[in-house]
Structures are given as C-alpha cells and as structure tokens.
Image (tube, rainbow, N blue to C red; front, side, top):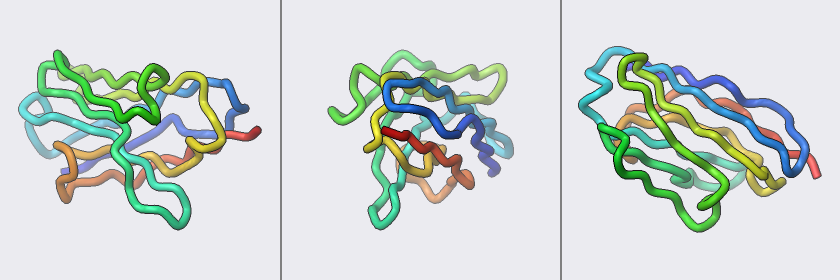
Length: 114
C-alpha cells in the first residue's frame, strides 16, 4: 500500500487549498478513504471521510462547511478541498485507507498565516 499526498503549502487566513492523495497497491475503489491532520504536540484528528462510491461523507464540526472530500476511483485519488482556512487548520494532513487503518501517507504540510 502506498499513499502519496500533495498540495500543501503556506496560505493566508481565508485562503483555499486542494490536497490530493494518489493511492496504489490495493483496490482503491473497494475502500473508504479519509483525511486526518496532526498539529504539533497534538494527536491525529479525523477531518473528512468518504465512502467507496463517494455518496456519503463525514466531517467534524471543526471543518464542516469549509472542507470537502471527494474521490476519483478511475485515478485512485482522493481530494480534500479546504476553503476559508484558519490558523487553527495548520497541521500535517495525512491520507488514510479506510478510517484509522494502519495505512498512512507521509503527509503534506499546511500552514495558515494570520
């Protein structure tokens, strides 16, 4: 299993970013996918998940209405569109096969300046 995230960077408060995670080594269309984030000194926090067909998504209140998860099964890719970013969104964002499985990407850094 390999998960490769990209798209992170430095953005001003109120800005937007789209993260991508390209998956390989398993049948992508057969697994739900999720995004987590980890800020310095904190544990990993689930920020979005999506079912295999993309018909159902989940977001915690902290990002609901600002983040959108989507997937393209033909490209074995899951995306995270992040709008109206806040400094509290600063973290390493990680892609996960399933929701909380042992399969993680290396992460991509998102830094939001105030």
